[in-house]
Each structure stands twice: as structure tokens, then as C-alpha cells.
Image 1 (cartoon, one colour):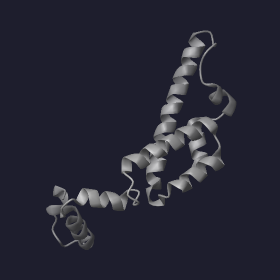
Image 2 (tube, rainbow, N blue to C red; image 1 turned 90 degrees about the vertical axis):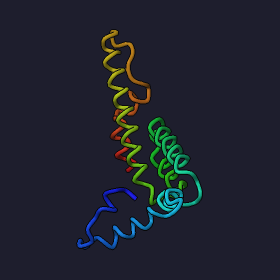
Image 3 (cartoon, rainbow, N blue to C red; image 1 turned 180 degrees about the vertical axis):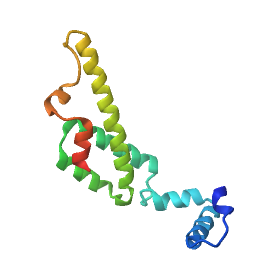
Length: 135
């Protein structure tokens, strides 16, 4: 277990929880076992689920089809892992918006003939706005 858990004094109200965590983290092969509990839970590797989320989110940013994206999220069957979907969504949206701003700046420096993708121009909203609609 992590050092901060093992060097606790047992006079705090949360000690029962800490002791349970120490017990779980001290078991043989604890990481593999807890990954199944905290991961998808159906035997899929966590990395596979994260990759599926990334693909789903990138496809959503391209199509902006909210109903289709919501359906894909349900098909993942991992509601306890939605925090990871939100984290990855924010990260991808920030990266997309960052690229978009860089392209617009380059486009205006080159006479305005380039910059942004057709989807950016058509949608009229940033990737962050699109992700906010999904979440």
C-alpha cells in the first residue's frame, strides 16, 4: 500500500475506510483485481475502454451528432467510468480548440486563405461547446 496509508494513527473517524483500503492494496495481485472493479468490470482492459472513448469523442467532434454520441456512450456499458469520459472529452476538446486557433492565426497571416477545418467553419461553435452539449 502507499506509505501515507501505512503510517496513519488510528484515531480518526475515517480509519475504518483507510484500514479497508490498506487491506485491499496489500493483497497479492491487488492491481489486477482492483482494475476489474474500478475499470470496465466486464473483463475488458481499461486501455481498450479508454481507446473506445477517445474514438467516440473524436467522431462526435467531427459529426456533432449528439444523439449518436449519447447512444455510443450507453453502448460502452460503463457508467461508473463516465468520469474518464468527461476527462478525456475536455482534454480532446482543448487540444482541438488549440489547433483551431493556431490554424486561424496562420491563415490570417497567409492572407486568410487557410485556417480551420470546414467542420469548424460550419459548426460555428468550439470543440469545448460541443463537449459541453454532450455532458
